[in-house]
Image (cartoon, rainbow over all chains, first blue to last red; front, top):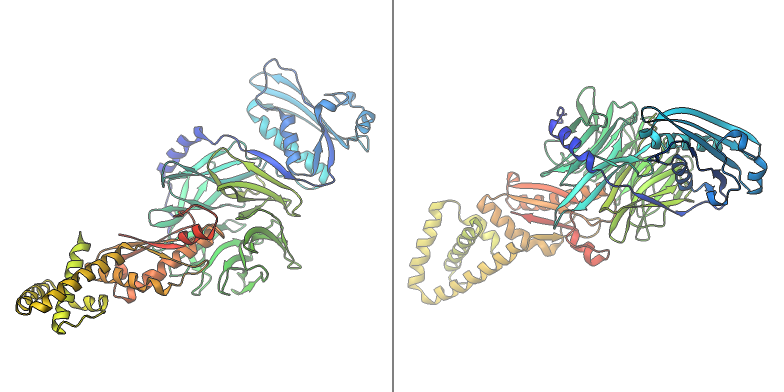
Length: 434
Length: 185
């Protein structure tokens, strides 16, 4: 029946060859934000070195904060002064400019391609320093440093942990001639930068998902006349697969403890939900009917699996209890509801809803069962919530091209990520990685 | 190819029926042919019988030739059809595809050839759901063929979901082209 194949050397080699050709960066455009935004002045950081640094940390912070739609970073040209030390920060000046927060940074070169950085956040209204970071970092880590600082600033101001240091996985599809495509599974920073190809295929790759420790991704890839689930360890590139003898195998979802993988298999005629146990190496069938059951996803506490079934005539979302083995239908409005994912606190579901002929991203409050449509785009797919529950990433279309887009869980902020490459599809937001 | 050989055999078999029935033109085609040529020897018999009778009754011979051509054309026209289209979010086979599917079934049952049934969906809805829809569409066609005498071992089913559209576009005209099962021999 099911089997896990051991490490495939071929893929390891392929991955190390692919890395140098990683996708160029993707640019994000904020298309809609909040009416009331926090005013923050990120002063251009002082740099004491003679050669230019590869990354401007202050720019990374500005673009991160802008993308959330919650901040209005000040134009550096309008600043009365550009302090880089605490002594030079005059709260009155910043109050005159209606700023609520100020970020300053001071960077000096060190031997061995390293940098000594001091960065501080000030609360202008309370006239006090919020935090100061003093750190030695490698020049190659400047981008990571910028994301960590963004996380800290975001958390101290909003009270919510930032997700700038998390990653997103997605698939790109590039035409290589008639009926000939190249599919790449890529992992990038949460802002779409530093995309790195981890797996590639001439056949479709879909249903990308992360393990809860952020160390592995699972996905489905068509291989000949089969679809197989692959599980890839990101640090080593090591890959294993789960495959049924017949039919297709797809839609993987890890349990929180990493012991189980829920997935769909059409081995027994119609697609059904199964549970693979990594400890025993065996699978158990969870649904049993003649209809389509697919797109399983574990709840954060791993007590439930939410899935799509058309047993009611049209695809709707159901919740399966692993304790009782019973399913409860969750969606009743909208002619179709598909591919649900829980928020990390389990309080919300996000999914695709067909309403008046258009496929939108919608969310459901699990306590009240209230549904809210979050997007105005059509042909939306693959919504995936950030680990702090503030934003979700999804794929949609612009013209005939697949693009990635973001929307806040309250529907107030939307961003789109343009790409110079073919289609970008099937995004999945990682959990916290540190 | 194997296909054209079969068509000849089928045509000859129906010629025999026509002769046996005294020249009555009948519309039973595929069903009759499936039961006819069981072994190579019976095929030889068919050839002999046809020749003999054809020589004796000239009028019948003319009819038989016409019917053969018609049958040939019909079968090859039906075999040239390799696409079955479906309604949105549906996988039941529409009645209009029965003749075509019967012709494919007859050919497969006779020849023992193998076929890949590729199931597809339009781009609306999620990729996974469309993968499932494509799979069920192809399996529905496979089940029909099996009822008509094709062995399960001759059929391979593979779903492409929404990943391989036939037509690019965002109107029902293109979408309807993409909701399909393709016969690939």
